[in-house]
Image (cartoon, rainbow, N blue to C red; front, side):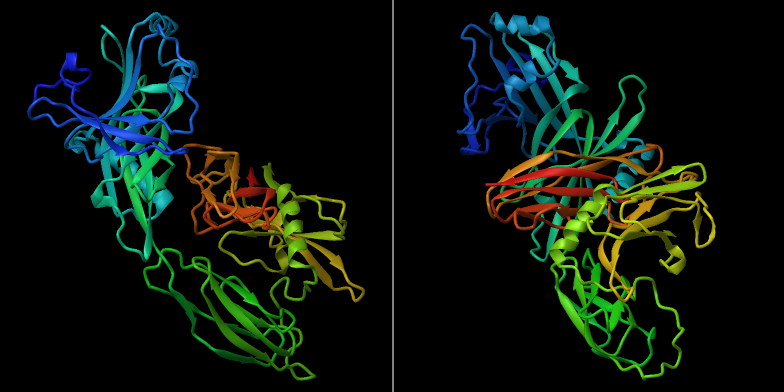
Length: 553
């Protein structure tokens, strides 16, 4: 083993060799250069960020000392390259990393250095309980995780002539870019690989282990993953593979029904069998003939023909089934019950309905006081009333789920019963609100619906609700055709409990206020469509939302 001890050449390493450009800087992206310790047998590498050519240079005091900012990577580390990307101004002016006395010394000519050291983790030194925490956290946000690779990342500072000081917890986020190891890269074009950084940190005061998920951005062209962190200790790269959907088929091509309320079950099969996202949505081309629920159950409404379409969420692949309903003039069983909403008519333009739904969702909030549920929602123009559906999770909405508000001006209600019985707040429940107006014949026309909010009952001992949605950026400015992905996370009411799983609803759901300006995918990817501005809403499972402003130039 080499005798290098770390730090500057005076402390062991010899960085007197030439620098090699690893990545050229452009007008908008920074570059990277590399040098290798010249001592025999060492092989340790140092990386420095090359500022983007379009970045204005910061004015410097000609008498001030130099602040070196770099990252060192040990030869056997699983990470082959790394950079510390904060600007010198951020480190000196926006943080307390260096004391005021140290900053004054630098202004007077004293050199200083801040650097990251990346090394291989001795996994045998990690307690089994902590490894289980890391794996559990990775599975919670990514599903099945086929691989977890550990590495150590420690931050240090040093004044010239001083000692090397470790920095464990900071008052600002440090921007770090690492290169994903070759053996963790995806080479299969039928799937996408999603990476997360899991941080295992030990509190310097209590010694208690804390596990956090760090979201970041992958540059597929360079295999670089950029993330932010304010604590330094042990990290893990976790990934999950999401295989793309190639198609969908239905078990029936034609179905004939002869009674109002008669049902038929359609089953969709998504290909390939190991596709990550097999979710499909069901639609009817004519709800006056037949409707279909979220599970593919078709219910006859009136005579005629229509098409039931199953559309995959991933790739928007479709399959169709022709439905023929021929109801005799005297139905065999006219009193047979139909699921709620099957008699509603939809005569509102799709764009207006989207606008109404954004208005409804903007005020959606479910709170619990004592043995009651308070539900509020946003007001919809022209609404003559609202129907508030409340049901326990895992059960279907029925006619007993409906709580009526017979005024378009009232946008709140207190719920004391579900299915005609007293609320059980040990259970989880789901809520949505429908706005309607009436036709001359008395039938209700749906103006819009909220998302279905899934709520943890306040007496539930195992789960907790979201109290806030946070995003890494609250606004984006994009050019037409360009895209960006929202990075969101939740703040829980009780950090010791878990939030609901994806079996209830996805952790985040998204909506755009103007699809002519920007669209947003189910995974939070914003795509700029036309010039203007709009708002993208990020909804948590329980309906709590965060606004993200999008400007397209």
